[in-house]
Length: 137
Image 1: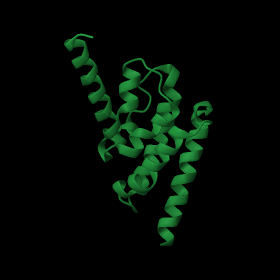
Image 2: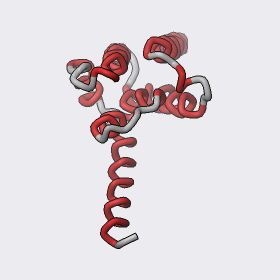
Image 3: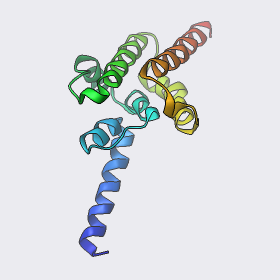
């Protein structure tokens, strides 16, 4: 492999890691024409800033028809998360619930077969459970 090709590959990997850590991994993969695994739709929720999450709510369906239902589903969850941050900090919600949930979904063998509705129902149930637990404390 040439030095130039190796540098390009390393730059691409670094960019992908940065996208993961900022919550924009799904956007990157879809822009590159790659398939987006279901767990990755949680990435924005688990790592995104308030501004990036709010943008997902305001512009959910600007992407390919094939994945539009996923963008809309994620917008619905992003809206719920923004509502919850009236009571909880986004950072605390991400650290205590959304990052662990993202990792759990990535490791489960049934998740790749889920519909967007199953994903929304699962994440919503976890958010409500977490909200109830937080209010009880």
